[in-house]
Amino acid sequence: MTSFDTSPQLNVWRALLALAVVFVMLATTGWTAVRGHRGTTALQASLTAWDHGRLHGHRLPDADASPILLRRFFASLGAQDRGRLARRYPLAVGNMDGAPVRLRYQANRIALHQARKVELARMHDSRLSPVGQQDAGRRMQRYTSLMAKDRQILAFDPDGTGRVAEVFGDLGRAERVSVVVPGVDTDLFTFRKTYRPYSAPYGMAKSLYAAERGADPSTRTAVIAWADYTAPSGLGVDAATAMRAEEGAVRLNKLLRGLPGDSSVSLFCHSYGSVVCGVAARELPRRVSDIAVAASPGMRVRSASQLHTSARVWAMRDATDWIQDVPYLELGGLGHGSDPVSADFGARVLSARGAKGHAGYFEPGTDSLANFAEIGVGSYGSVRCAHDDDGCRADLSGATPAGHA
Image (cartoon, rainbow, N blue to C red; front, side, top):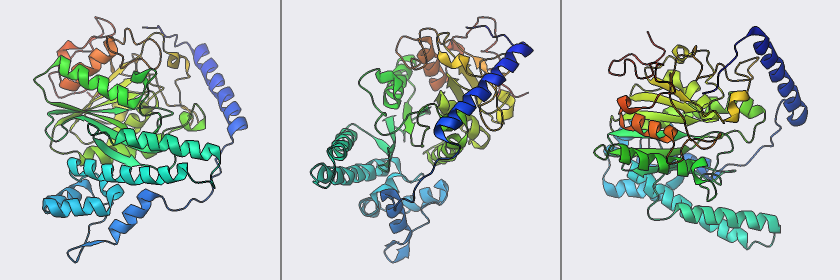
């Protein structure tokens, strides 16, 4: 673990460095992004159709109703009526927190089929440039991959660079659920990678699911690869502020409240994903037992206690990760606060030995993945601390999480 100089001089230097970085970003990207007015997206159109729809003469509940209300609504329907709604409003149902998960899988498969047909037509549209046709082909291939029989797509939005969430395991029967929250440059096209697969959400979640099953085969687990928020693109202004994290936190909390059953949930938040988890922490449902962050630029607070969560807070960082060099401060909305692996922050600091850089935390054979898996199955006594004497296993049998007295 890298040692940290907390002298006043270094803090001043970091503040000046942060300001310099900010001025460069503002000069090159502009303080505000100018966006033109866009037409209605496919998801918005499906949600609007739902809000105006009827079933057997009765109005449907508000598409944005609470997951509890929507869960009760779908529970009142027979299988035939549920299937009818999935076919009529596939994107709405496929993204509806509170709808039965298997119905969401079914609806998203229909939505993917429809989106694939659109891109297949665009591939041969002579009005498009060659670049446009190539983009259509890339989208069509991605949608085809997501439609494979073994894929369980919990959320899908084809708009822009796209959003997606996928489940590994049986979410409906799981005793413990893990949610992987990724960082910058996450979208439909970076969701799964052939090169460096464990740096992408699909590979992260699949690796964690296998590690959890290895850690405790007797515990039924499910892992969600959650790329269902608009992540910052690159290391620009969006990545230095909480704007994307605030939007993502709302979506994350809605997902968590819509999960079936009452199983314990653990969040595994990588890089900017830890900013999302930090912003979401105050509103997390109590079933969230753990927040584990890796490669974090900060969680928008000075200490774990300021997260105001009942969840245990864990943090790790490999000694070779470049994120350790970012200024851990918040100034005028820029920056993300204190370093989660610092002693003053109050998280339980775990070993990340073997992670090798910023994107290696879910690589098989690393301490970081092994620790994630032990947390995911609730085997807290088996976690590997960053230091043998730092007390990261302390009080794990009690109800008081890290940072809460």
